[in-house]
Image 1 (tube, rainbow, N blue to C red):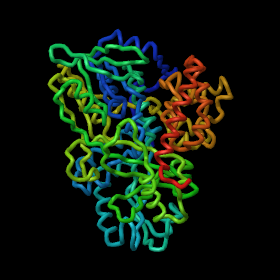
Image 2: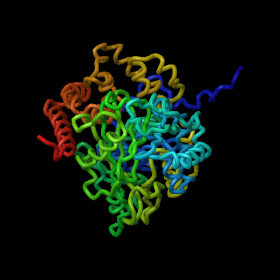
Image 3: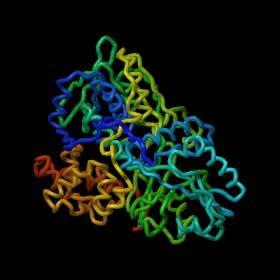
Image 4: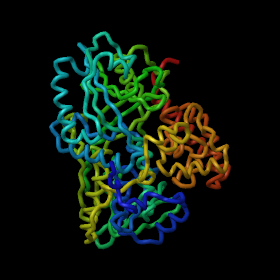
Length: 557
């Protein structure tokens, strides 16, 4: 059968490049100081990233600045799920689920190299399970609702599994009281790489983007916000813009207070944590949802290569937003859930990595954070600054669209959003099945860079030593470190090991062992002095040591 082309030629030209997009920090700083922008976005998480992409794709002169690194806050510490959210149906928020599933579909079309289908398994147990057989029947009705409002777009409907089928997916699951299972399908992504790819796509379309640019204050004239004053590499730079967007997540109130001294805090941070254990300790091939004894919250165990990620919690948080880690108590909580559900015994010694992040929820202090809605909030302040908070990763594209609608109103312009069908860099023409079939380093690079993997491959062709792994036990290559420095604005060992790769999450101690080698590669690419290189390595090692000390506090010597 002959079919019509899936898309018109040239539709994704901006996302398909013949040469790599190289980002020069010095040139970017110069443009920020010299140019006047239609819109300046403050905050380089997922929401800010899609806001600047939407803005530049509508023809606005757009810039984005981030005080630390792209996705260094909540957006690299999420559950990494691109999903509708089953429990939002339980909360009665069907519209959020319907829209989230539509956005999931768009992510899978626009970024097929980064957003992958993932099966979720709910074991049905006679007792001490997420569901007993009586409740399972009602929950299956919820799954039908999920499929009907948009879950079907992923290409599979939910399934009821027999005991042998459940154990084929999770052979170490305790089978004493197992009665079967339910499986449905969602998607996952490397959240930090997704954010970086959105930011780079915006840069490919002409946006000016920079990390390590801390906003210290806002520029105002006649009561209107007209830009920001930022400190970048020790230099104070005034960035002029006709409109400003505050997309700083859990730091939203701090930036809003710069524009309005009488601002009342709106964000209620909710902490979520994940820990990582070796796959051979659990041996699952999907995400398995397990009960936590005596708790209402369910935990998830997700295979990621030769690791399994356990999460998540959802609790109020009162500490510093700049120092969030998984604690010993939280780790024990997740290990308890896994040990209740699976045979064997996971201990703190098995935990090879951890993350702690904050959700920027909006609302009062009443009730638990778990029960709070995940809808986004967009406001325009008296000075004209647009502020966005709340929401979730899955709806970030739509949030960016709505934010730019507000910006267009502030500017008095009109133009339609293009991002619903705009492929991200590396996504246009990407064939996930063909890449997976190729195996080896090609499959590894393909799932991280899409069609742009060839640019990393070119580095290896020029210097075969760059094909060597940079962290023992993980597939990341030395070439990816070089590419991160040249094309991804990586400035430090932490930028590379925590976000350009996920080595810190999946192999914390091994990543520390590789810090000096990464520092040496960055020094060569960025012309760092010996002192700068040593400082970058030392800061990473100190950060890892701090994370580990918080995680293991109270452990036996």
